[in-house]
Length: 157
Image 1 (cartoon, one colour):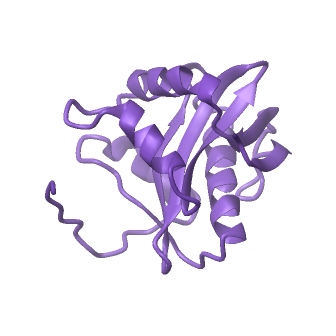
Image 2: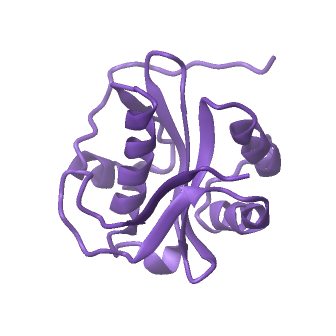
C-alpha cells in the first residue's frame, strides 16, 4: 500500500528554481523495490554490511518513515528514505538515476523529502554524507544545508 505524496513536483521548493523534471513522487510500492535497490547500487549507495531490501522493508514498517520514489513513465528515476524521531527528520539514500543527474531531479527529490517531513510536523532536517561521497556536499550546500557540527557515532545491536 502506498500513501500519496504529491502529484508531479517541480524543482522549485528546495531553495533554487530549476527545470521541472516531470516526475511524479509517491511512496514506494512493492513493484518498485527492485528498481530502487538497482538505483541505489547504480549510485554507489549500498554497502556490503547493509541489506538494501531490509532497509526498504524497515523504512516501510512504521508510519514515521517511508521510501519516496520519483517515477517517470513507470520507471523509478529517484528515491529518498525519509523518517523522523520526534525531534528532527532524516533523509537517507537520496539517489537520482545517473543519466538524470544535473537535470534538477535531485533538487525535486530533496523538496519531496522535505515536504513529506513538513507534513509530519518536522521542523529540522538532517542527512548524512558518507566519507568518500564528498562530491555531493556542494549540491546540498546549494539547497541550504550546512554542517551540523556533530559527529554521528554508531554500533550494531
